Image 1: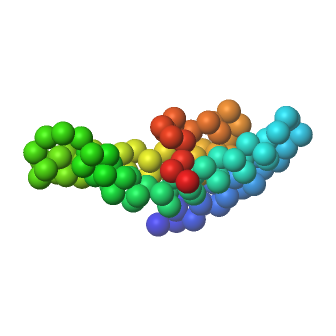
Image 2: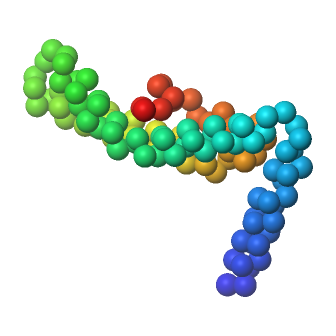
Image 3: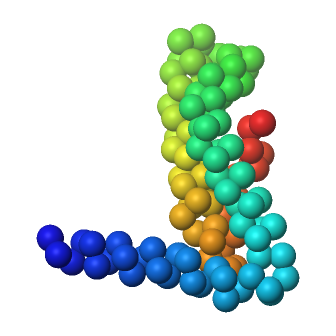
Length: 110
């Protein structure tokens, strides 16, 4: 149990000092802001993947119930992918060079 507070303190100090070392290099804080905004948008918009994908499958030809079920399954996997991309942006956005995230198409839903 004593290792957890020490590890948390180390991560906190690392979180505060590493970005400051790169503050003067290029547009670090601009990239950090963009990564966090993209991350929050992807996390908040992740549940919208299900109805958007169901609507896309609804407009195709085929059996109605199977189309909606396939849209639900595909939307769920896209939701997990978008949420993972957003979490990656938040977790690794402060590390220089990792501010690109996992590429999503489109990058954000809104």
